[in-house]
Length: 49
Image (cartoon, rainbow, N blue to C red; front, top):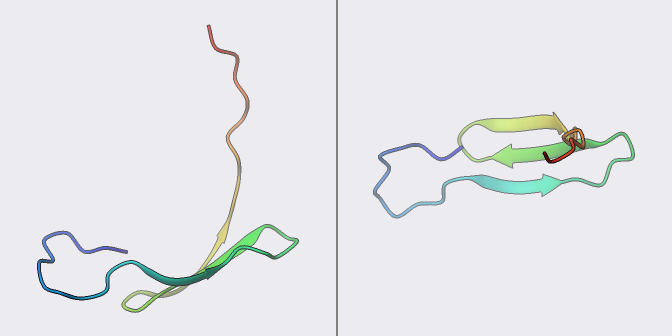
């Protein structure tokens, strides 16, 4: 959520987040882009060769 080329003094990025739902949904808010509902999906364990 950070615009490239932004040089002025301002707040960029996520304003708040809430990752505590049992469903795995993570709520993220941004001052410019709004509300996002995300789901964490961990990467599969892969053997190192």
